[in-house]
Length: 137
Image (cartoon, rainbow, N blue to C red; front, side, top):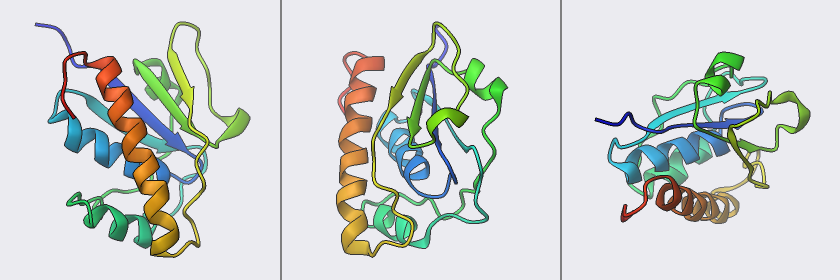
């Protein structure tokens, strides 16, 4: 029995982009991937517009809580996806890293957040297909 791949999504406040990505990965992988998310400077709550945008997709991220990303989480992850946290995210040799250049949804309207959400969904689907060959997201 092989263990599930672990994917860590990181953005500065862990309140928008990384939470949407984590929500999609949980939903699209059907539990085949262990999903974590964190931030370098976690906010106090999830962006309500991000919650609304994901609810439109049938994914509830309203109970998520911004968390501090730890060095241990990075070391324990098979893939680390950063979203605009610059030099504050620790990097370890041998890990899979991707930096997704995504607009921060903070302060944006639902109409502005939907394209960000859709971009995240496409990226998560591609990542999932790559880490779980044969999966059909």
